Each structure stands twice: as structure tokens, then as C-alpha cells.
Length: 97
Image (cartoon, rainbow, N blue to C red):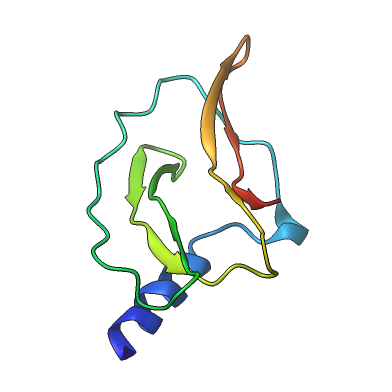
């Protein structure tokens, strides 16, 4: 359990703060998504938040996925993703709906 909490905390710290959110545009495509095998759900109702490639200003870095408790009943996780547009590859943050 302690390991799970540390992994979840590390994953959350790697996310940009809402107050500092900015549009991230990268000129090169991200690598293919890494297939993760999350294992069994640690608690009923928890949702797997899949990993993604994050741009660190010089290269893509893989941020591993983690289990999370939804913020409210019936919430659905919409995964973050890279979208290609005329400026390059734009990161669209994941969010709960």
C-alpha cells in the first residue's frame, strides 16, 4: 500500500499545476504509447490512469500510469493525449468528466 501511495504521489507531482497550465506544442511526434499492465485494482471503483509521454523541453519522457479514486460517483477519466495540428503536436490534458 505504501508503494502504491508513493507511485500515485509521484505521478500527481509530474502533472502541470492548473495555475501554471500552458499550451505545450512540440515539433516532433511522440513515440508510441508504452503498453502497461496495471495488475489488479487495489480498491473497488478505482480507475487506471494510463501513462503518457511528457515533453521535458528537449525530449519525450514516459510518465507511468497509476490507479486513482474517482472524485465523485460515476466520474469517467478522459485520457490525455497528443493531438497533431498545424503548429505541431499539442498536449491535451486528461481530466475527469
